[in-house]
Length: 573
Image (spheres, rainbow, N blue to C red):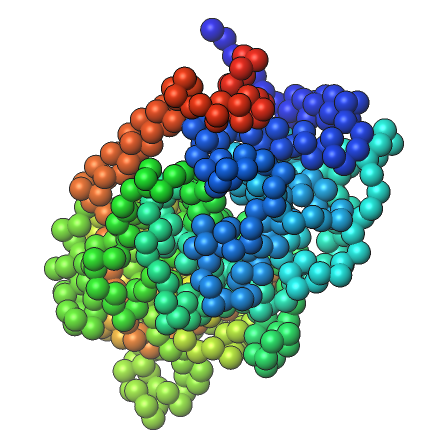
């Protein structure tokens, strides 16, 4: 029962062999489109295809045009959001024409929407079977077409000299140096993705949670922080439609890759709802539905955090442990509320950046002057703040700590998964490179993530910040975040590493306005996750075995699709 080893070279060879076979067999656009439609169907189970066919009504024709309004309703797109409706329709229209996304496009058919579902789902990579495939790239191409109905499309038909490998490799002759997307369109799209991360946590949940206008505005504020990671000057112009700075493909793809790798999960779950019938959907509890939102934690902030954490860290439930505004800003209060929690935690901290240390310390808050005497601030020559930091004084950080908290006056805690996520004014990630990087010092040292234990003596008190570190004073009143490159317990900014700009060092010193600690589930939540996985496994098996004798006229549709008869089985190429 041995298995052959797969290597990148072997994979490349398989891609080329497969494409050569297709190239020799299909020579025009119609044949290519039919091939990719049949290929999409084979990545569905019989039950999924039948559930989808319910949307065909009585026509049973995959070439029939999928009505726009019907698609928007099934995807729960708000009726009053015209821009979002245009974005969603353009995405599905573009993907429905895959791989000929730049050829003259017809309105999306039922078969085309089926291709779009497979492309947007986790099956997309296997479906395309080409090493260059990236759904983020396809989404950017689709977004670049929004509001541009008079685009010049390719009109050439495929023939023996028109190589399919090139079509897939260069995304149908897309010139990424020439296309950009308005920040206004990116803002609407990312706001939608953040809402989906909250309202659509699974691919089988009932979509009975509506985002009202006030909620949308808070999600929009979070989306702006993500877009500032793409272009720090994205919103420096007026906010009138069409006046914001455009986003390039490189800016867009970089942030999706290193800052928000999980932001598409909600969209993946949403499109798979089109493969379920309403009766098969189940009630799902949202992460903070039954927990009152705090001053700091909101649905949108949760989605921001969830989009940045690794996929293996799933936050399905949040438990309120410590809220500074409610329990008091003190180390002792935090310790009494948090230290009994044995599961991972997320620390949220927000404040206002102090722009003039001398004036603030001497005339407004003498305690800050004392903090600076203990904290060796960054030299002015090493301070390279981007535009968004200069314009936005509000800062928000989240710290994920997998291990339980404990008093560590001389030692440290916090595993190698400890991560600092900068949430405002832009989003960024700072990951630990070793274990044990957090201290909770009860003899006057405060809290440090990435810092060395402070020196606390009768005649001397001195903080020792690491190259990348978040340092919080003993009174939970002041904090400083430092990012000066490699050499510390945490890696520099993920964004700067990707862009090779780690020489742009900076430090943010701020007065704390809110600090909170939230527990990421517990034994009960873990049991619920296990039950959910067992249900999904059982449901998958159930949906693969359908009583074909009871299908009646649907059997003919399945045979036409190649899912039954002729020794066919769904879900494989």
